Image 1 (cartoon, rainbow, N blue to C red):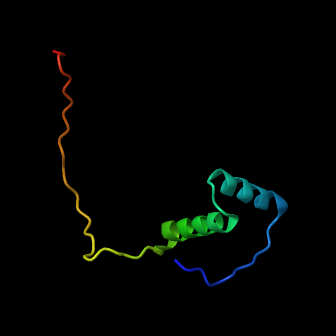
Image 2: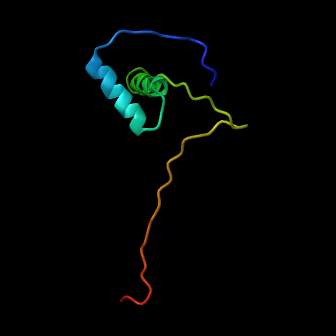
Length: 76
């Protein structure tokens, strides 16, 4: 997704340091880490979805019951 908007905000040194550390651990830029945090917050609390469907046909959510049985060869 092309990024065309710049947003600036104020914060304290402790929060900035924590964000930078987290971004470095996740191998992201600080901007990417902040965007991920904001997107996650909006998805969880406000129904926001920035993900666009790229497949030819829309996906349908289904629930399919399954029975899983573990079998070990040679064990009785």
